[in-house]
Length: 250
Image (cartoon, rainbow, N blue to C red; front, side):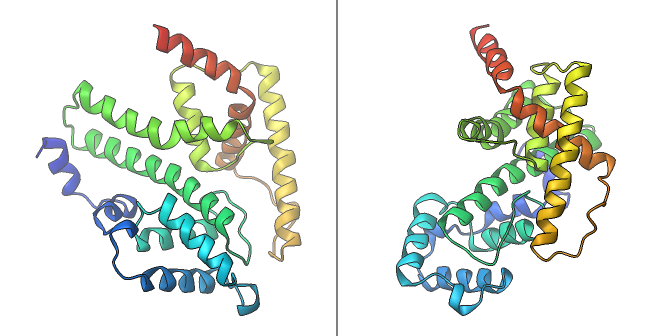
């Protein structure tokens, strides 16, 4: 085992990393496991009997899970939905579940997971003062690109508006670190203004959905920074793609 691997195993690893050790859905022999998981999600999302998927809809949902998300464990999917309900994934959740909602939650969770694992490994390596080889750094970065950057770039092709969540903020920081994004003062003001507008719009939507929240609730500094960064990432996509192409040629 590598020295870094020993250091990581000695620390309390995040749940997102621990789930990798569990049996995946594709390896399960008992079909009742999926039924139990869906029943759990019905309770978590407070989906009443009349609003639960009918037999055909549930069959379609099961097919989507088995074909596209079988690399996750049952417990990890439950964890992903708990994060979504808590607002950690930046997804609006409702009292329903279908293939579209399931996909949004798991795709966003996958990016969230990659960011958490990357942060954990980097923290362990820095606090334990281990020497990180260039190969190890490259492996961590490639994992982040595969699980976070690439899915966003693909999803961006169909986006009609900025995707605002902490996972996307991590992607912005990656491109900012490598100077693939340049923002002038005029653009900073523009992004901050739009961030505030989107925050107020979200407050109204949350209020309309029954959440007890004041419409004049102010954004915290970190949240405001996250909103503006996600908006900047959305508008700077062509600049980023050009920078990526230049780097690949180089």
